[in-house]
Length: 244
Image (cartoon, rainbow, N blue to C red; front, side):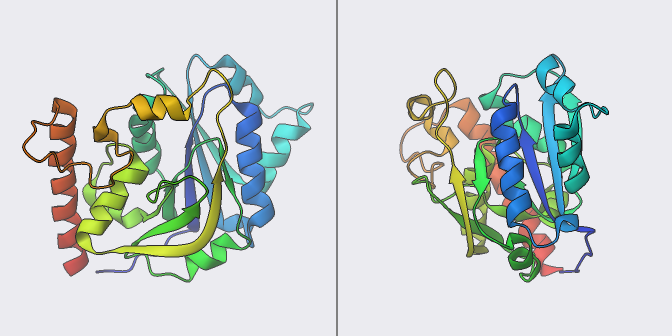
């Protein structure tokens, strides 16, 4: 496998909609815990009808709060079409992952906080030939993995619910590794995505069993069939890439 030099250590991919308070807390957690701020890239994806977020991210002379974040972090704002919210996270992450320049990408959300000091130093010291699993306060062992950007380029797409999906692919390839980085996934505010909403989703999204593609004698729904096919294609491409 050829080594590639990246201008940044980590690219955080964050789709968001009208949750400025949560997003700024997430960004602040990245700032206060990083060793070298120049090694962090943040790609934020907002909807084209989200006037609240678009207005907030306009840097003007009287918006010192916004300017502060843009001066301290390499932040890029990508505006795209309105999707279907949580179910379309994979689409938003796809858009962002294709332009990420970090050694690692993380499929972050606006309600996740970084809790480990010098996380960039930890990531920079690890070879980008494995998928890294941080410790998350939620009881989901696949949450918020750090994925080598070169894997993204190799498969030329990402699919499914990203944290669970990459965990599955990495397990199949034997390239999964725990990393000493802690993250906190905040509880969702009333009226937004809740654990009850998560529990109501189809099994194809992952949930309790990270090997969710094993349907036994049952016929998987069309969504699962597409994801299983995509998973197999990802495994084939990454395996081939690692051998080169």
